[in-house]
Image 1 (spheres, one colour):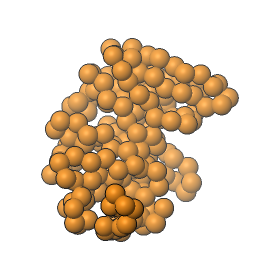
Image 2 (cartoon, rainbow, N blue to C red):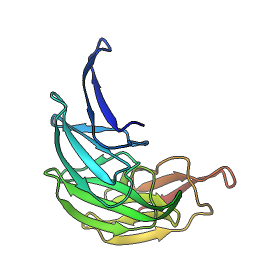
Image 3 (spheres, one colour):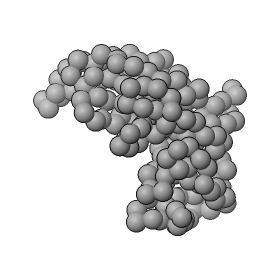
Image 4 (tube, rainbow, N blue to C red):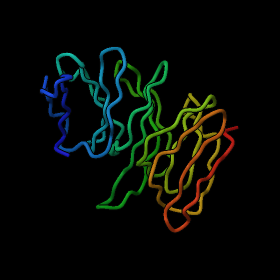
Length: 178
């Protein structure tokens, strides 16, 4: 991507566009209370006014934010990955306030997919498997999966976390979040 965020009218015409970073790779925007949130490869979460396109703030998490932000009641959760060349070598989950302050970061290894939210915390997928982090940033568990790549983000419903593994394993895994 070219690092731009666009707003389109219902008729498809452009309302505004704003360049936020050199690249926005796969982070889909999330919106709440007139603000659009999107991650970038510059290692930041960006907050943009949905009417004017003005960037309100950005918060650095130190790694590429390629998953979509998860909007919780008090914080925004994002996953991030640190790179050495073209290889992801670390990363995790960060919580950012709606004012743009970094609240906490928890290392879980590289995390390129969007987080999932459960009653107990935030689930992220990494090269280490699935991790559940409570809402204060404490790692509750890490479940190893027989793969190092996932084609999609985890999802959670009724206390169960679901995750796909890659074509070599090709399975849907279901784990209790407790």
